[in-house]
Image (cartoon, rainbow, N blue to C red; front, side, top):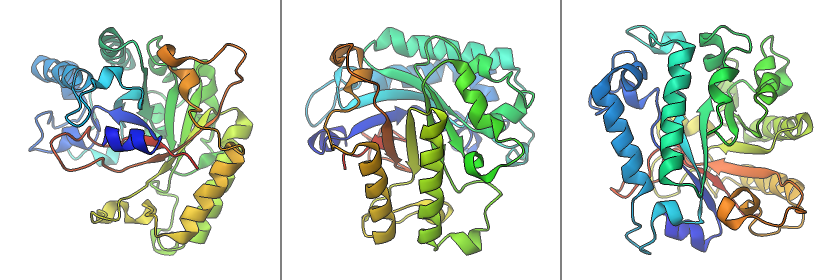
Length: 314
């Protein structure tokens, strides 16, 4: 996968685990009845996860022989996707973890990733549920403001940035972490009438355009669009509402238009200024990012796992 991405000049972010869904599957090696609580509090799971991190970071690509930690195709590592979900998503009750415990776990693993790989960015993906779980105000920022996170990556499932929801300050508070912010507008929240919007790609395209513009106007550094899907594999029913294939003309044209708006000159290698080993001269101005997200990378054993975020050259 990474070798193909390199050929297409695509940058990849690899997630080590989807900390909500993967930890609640009884057949998962990281299973715990209250999700991420197991990774944080159960020593066997905590150590197993560190081994997973080391295995991926030190993995050697079977196609080109390059170590992942030395691969310039890799833009960064996502410690985990969705560490906390909505309370109703936990049939056995939500995780019994404090904000301090979550911060310590973030710090421990983010610093471990950096110790193995100093060449790539590290982040974590959070949602409004993370804010709500830890008080509903700005307290949650202490967990994502740790030094080893290079930027904040946040999903906006209801696109609060344009919907004027009462808690749209989730989006705006993220800037108080004093890090670059990458937003992910989505249709995964309860705001949306799925029956009405799922096949109405003109409406989806319009919302995504409005949100993308609003994020950048607010000071965002990047936008991740969910999801770019393969034409080969069947799209899971849970993702069909917001997964787009190349044959989806409406979404392809919309995303191409957004990419042109963000990067009008179509310059290659626009993300290299972020990578320490490939840093551009200090006079290079900040560059915005536009990314697409794959719901899964592939089903083969060499898969990097779920939630890989890709930057597509338009």
